[in-house]
Image 1 (cartoon, rainbow, N blue to C red):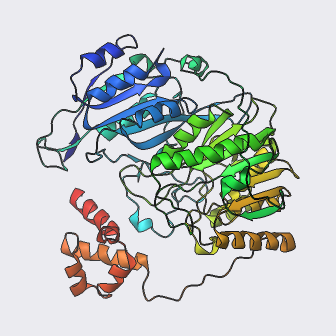
Image 2 (cartoon, one colour):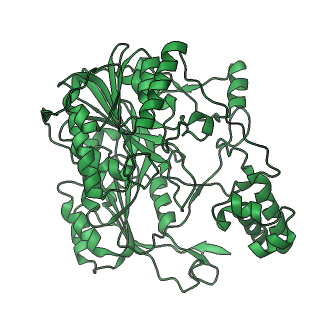
Image 3 (cartoon, helix red, strand yellow):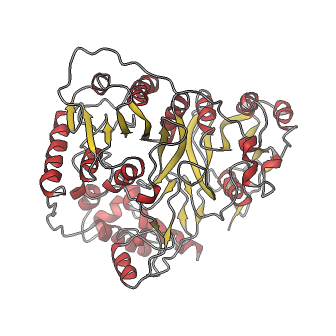
Length: 566
């Protein structure tokens, strides 16, 4: 039997928070939760004391608003290691401009290089109201579905809607506590380390920020950025001259080409920069130092700000850690509208699955910018699944509930199939760019992407009747982009090549089910030696199909776990 060991937590008030931290011994706390939405005054000293009190491997959570958290995150990134920006869907706010917002944020940092250790938390599986299947489509991998629920990601949409802007709701706080609470066996030992567990110690404050004591209208107490007038950037002269400004695809250095564009000349700029994760782009070096990477990003962000028209909009997509820095830079030059969360679950890994791709939305003017929410279709109700068969059936039966678009986008999937890709490691789906372009531009407007990759932005812009500018360093990507735009111009769509595979005598699923059956017979997880002796397929298919033995054993692990708990 497994139980949770309740942590020992101090809950200081707003007025006692700093003194409580100062009184705590150095490296004495396992976790700290700061409810920044309920702070008053300067937060820097509170953060410094929190860092001092944390043990090596200790966790720091900071709740707040997306327009304030980037500055806090950039500060913490100097002393702690960034792990996640958790987006929490909260009760809707309807500002006078920009998208309706439901996004409250929680930063998660770890101290030192010690192993990052949190408990896996699961939310219950949800069922589609029409077809009765789980909302999450496992794509033929239902045998891997855990009966206890799905492991939480860094986008939390399954908790009761609440005000998490200037406070933290009880369900959200309870989820955090589950993450930091060690799981103990019935004899009081830590299950993972098999050593006697010490009491987990933490601090959560200020206590006025816990629960449902505040209305959303009280949010103004949180630290706000001062007003400013956008800076005007002047381009540096370039030796080269470009022949065409609009409806063109440039091959070359983004900065050099951007500097030749006039001030206030583009309606919409978009960028999906390399993520600095050693991905295999054709030409870019995606393994720069953090400082070099951010300096490079700031250079083209400055050019983007300069060339935007007064009614123009900027969108930048990146991983949350880098997006914090983009936001800190852009907050000094443009007007923040939304930190949009694209909930696009990547390959499951770790105890908190990464799903949050950050899409910043800024404008040149505070208001009176191009904003066409009426032109963007409503999204299907979240109570329906996204299986094509279910969508066809329920819509033909008149079941077509819709929801308003907010700043958490969960209805657009990442590209997973080869037939939709153009040899780019992070190619974006057309639907994502279609939504952005419809939202922030009109027919005939100019849409620019200076890190164009294989041209999704330009291709969608051309299809929607916008003028386009695409820039990329890689001649092969430029060739692909020009070919696709030519097809859109002639045919109205991009021709996709067939990607039929040669038939294999086994599938990934059949191999995993084979391992599950072996686990049932053996009463334990099979080893490679077991498989070599007992599997009808032999060992080679498993080695060739799965990157690690652990990946192959996923279904078998569920079988062993369920057998031991029954």
